[in-house]
Image (cartoon, rainbow, N blue to C red):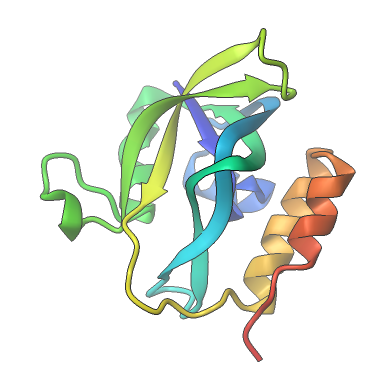
Length: 156
C-alpha cells in the first residue's frame, strides 16, 4: 500500500523502525493544505504535525510503499484504531490524492493520517523540528519548503 508521510515519519530511521518493509516511492505534494501542529504527542511531550485545509497551502512529503501487514503497526503508532469513534483517535487514516513531484498529471492515491485537533496544543520541540527538516533534506523536498520547516516556531 502507498502511505504519505509529511511529519516525523519522513525520517528514514524512524520509518524503517516502524515499518521495516518501507520503500521510498516518491516525493509528493498535498495541495490545498498546510502543515499545522494541532496535537500534543504523549510520547514526545510536544506538538506534532497535522495537515489542515488551506486553499493557498501545500504540504510536501514522502510516499512510501509498505506491506499491508504493517499498516496495523503504523495505525498504533499514530493513535488510530479502525472502528473506534473518530474523537477517540489521535489521527484517522484516510485515502487521498497527492501529486508526485508536485505534478498535477501524476496523482497518487495514498493513505494519510489526519489529526483530530486538540485545544491549545503546544508547539513542537527542537528535536521534532529536526526530524522534519532532516527528512525533508534527505528526500530532497523543494528548498523553499525546507526553509519553511526551518522557520517553525518551537518550544523554549
